[in-house]
Image (tube, rainbow, N blue to C red; front, side, top):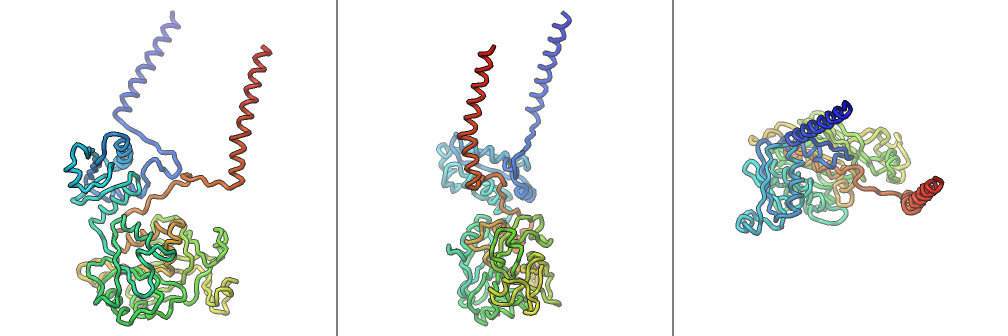
Length: 443
């Protein structure tokens, strides 16, 4: 009797505990993400972006009832965990076609984001597109980047290996619109351009074109200059002097490239970055296929901060490529690394309507080209450069994929996996079955 009473008491306590846990779980929520890279929640960069958007964000989903609405709710809930004033409502396109048409909705499930009087659309239900829309909201409007053309520069819309079409497409998703600028035809740099990009010209610019660039910088314009080894005689010395930057002769070589599996020492892999707003918290390796070293001149009216440096095993080779790849030769004028090949320049803007003027000079343009953009952190680094030049320091970079999102086994590993799952495992299970049956017979 006494044992039965204890049993009933234990059962009652279990019921009370279960009811309490259920009540607490209904009132309070807790989510833990143990996946690599925390891909079951939004990335730290997206969380930082939400912190920049003060005030409520309204998300309207134009989706018919069904799986799209469930998928939308899951995505928005991941963001709402870090911004409680982010709201979601659904509009059925079939029941309210006028509202759907007025909103400019083109597909079922499309989202409309509203914040601080601005709106943005999200067509794909994933974190990258959603965060890109938040970036565009944070910018408060489209920014214009003028890409100089006419002298063999990298094409901002081209799809060839050396062009920048893929990168510019990513910029467009983040609220930056590219427009061509031929300085030989334009009277001056357009006043509505937020940034001018000079991307690896191959031919000498006209003296008048260079002077327009110098005047643009003198008046407070922001500039991104991508230069290459061997591009000394392009008439850009006045621009370099105005910026207080000097290109060192020759090209950079790095023996550390072999550790990254690269046979060509001209392929630089940057693993560490000097401290600056662009590189703050950035720890992804970036690939620079062919770079030239730079130096900041003393006495320039700029705050010059290095953002890209070669390793201690690098050198600046001035001999022809075959000879320079052999190693450091001080007798030929080679310089031992680390050497800087990227600078961020800033100063008080000469323009009365701007606070700070910003310029970035990088001794390589290939890292943003279609051929190399997908390598390592090239895309994310390029976006950080543009964000800083446009004054959007706090904007987040592209969400990083989790390291275990894709499994790429070698042929030997694939053979081991196939043998283990298709042959070894079934044989082990069969042997276990025979063993159990044999023991039962012996009983």
